[in-house]
Each structure stands twice: as structure tokens, then as C-alpha cells.
Amino acid sequence: MSQDKIITIERHIIEGERAHPGASGSFSGLLRDLTLAFKLIWREVSKAGLVDILGTLGRENIHGDDVKKLDIFAHETIYKAMDHGGHLCVMASEENEDVLSIPDHYPTGKYVLIYDPLDGSSNIDANITIGTIFSLYRRITPSGPGSIDDCLQPGYKQIAAGYAMYGSSTMIVYTTGDGVHGFTLDPGIGEFLLSHENIRIPKKGKIYSVNEGNYHRWSEGMKKYIQYLCEEDPSTDRPYSARYVGSLVGDIQRTLLYGGIFMYPADIKHPGGKLRLMYEGNPMAMLIEQAGGRASDGVTRILDIQPKSLHERTPLFLGSGEDVMTAEQFLQGKREL
Image (cartoon, rainbow, N blue to C red):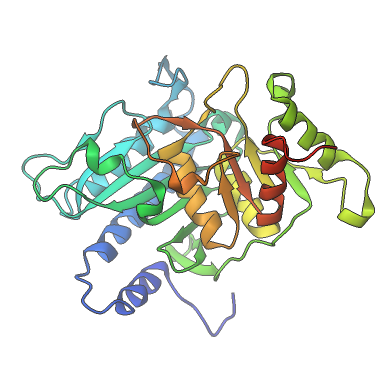
């Protein structure tokens, strides 16, 4: 970040609003409220080892995963930061089976928030990067309380998407449909400052990211693609290097900056895929596409999928355009070793 260009995320949001004459300011207010929630979560994550907030609650969420204390803290913090501003008509969280209504005594607005409060929570106790993923839509119901119909929109209708990453540094990476920008938290002043302007993913990379422990469950096309990536061929920059964090925000951050491909394919155990379309697939697909990459379930563009339920799952292939297209060819049987 150049010293003559210090831009806070709030200034960036306001300047983006000015580029749209007639904007009411509601959308900017919504993003500012969300940024505050991220700061509150960061504060707890950064001292998690010092307080009674690590570990599990001894129960599972609707996906069968152990519920972590930080998961619940993040879920409730975002809800409480966003329920009263008058910007939203409804929310949906990966931690909750049904939609989250706005309390009756608060005004409702014209936007919808979908969020994964703490992605990568299985890494909490190991102090590995975790994060929050979010996406925003315009409501489709005319007025009053929002409904599940407002939430079940295809990803191409997102008006914003991004994630907060709580790692060695804390970042917010987001798009409003005009490129992808990254902001790094300066703890000394409590502000997110523009650090990665207009991120562009390389057209082709040298890194693949996938949980190869599931190799024996994959389709033949998927297995062949991994074999292809691992073959020695200097003329095509192969073999690729394998990198897998197991935290989607960490893997996508690396893929955005360095290129290559992130994959979570369908397998025998999860024939419909494992990652959630609305909480993980759609927001990350919007970011990847806005950075010049490609996002697919192996056949279909992620953002074109019409969700049928709040917690629908999908295979996921995200990254450099050439790498994702090559993966699709192997998965569809159009290419052989």
C-alpha cells in the first residue's frame, strides 16, 4: 500500500456509493454495520486462548458438525449487529436451520444477508486461519418481513460478497460487482485500510488445492485430473504444487493472489458435494469471477444454479480460468491423460 494513498474501508464504501447517483446510503450503512461485526469477532478470535471461548458446546449443528463456542459467538454477533439497522428484511446463517427474521420492533429494509459466521472452525484450536463469509441480495418480496423466497436466489443476483479472514493479519476481501478489493486491519487505529486494490487472479496457476485424503472416493475423471496435474511436463508448468489449508477463506485468499485451482468435488460419501451453495459457493464464486477467474460445479457455472433449500450443497471448482476449464474437461470425460 503506497503511503500517499491511505484509504479506509469506510471511505472506499462511500466513494463507491458516489459512483451510483441516486443511492440512498442504506447499502453503505449495511456494509459499515457488517464491518463492525467483523471487528468484534476479530477481538474475540485474537484472545480466544485467554478466555473460555475455545472448544465445543457438546452438540452438533444441522450439518452434523460439532458446534464450537466461537461459531455461536460469531453467529450471534453478526445477527445482533445487523438486526436493527433497518437495512435488512431477513438473514440466513449456516448455523441456523431456518431463516433469521428481523425482530418485529425493528424496521425492515430492502436487502438480504446470507452468512457463514465462522468458516474453518475445525481449525480453531490449532490457531489456523478462520473467517466469516457473506453475501448480499436485494429482496424480491414487496415489503414487510422477508421470507425464505428472498434468500433462495441464484448467485448471479448477489449485489455484494466477500469474507473477513482472521489470521496472521485480519483482512476483509469483498466485491460489489466492480472488482475485488482487500483491506487489512491496522489494530493500532482500529481501521481496515486498503491493501490489495483491484485483485486480479492469474489466468493460469501452478497450485492445486484439494483434500486428497478423499481420493479413493472420487470419480475417475477427478482422479485423472489430479494425475494430470502431478505429471512431469515442464512445457506446461507441471507438476503443480499441492496446497490445502482446510479453511475455505485461507485457500481462496491464496488462489486469488497466486492463481491455480481450489476444488471440493463430489464423492461417494457426498454425491451432491459437501460445501454449501449459498454460504460458501455463491459468495466465493462471485469474488473469483469478479477477479477474472472461473467458478463451476464441474459442469455448471455456480452463479447460475437456482438453490432449492437454504443448506443445499454443491461440488466446487474455483480459480484461474484455464485451470478450472481443464478440470471441467476431465470431469465431463472430454479429456484423457
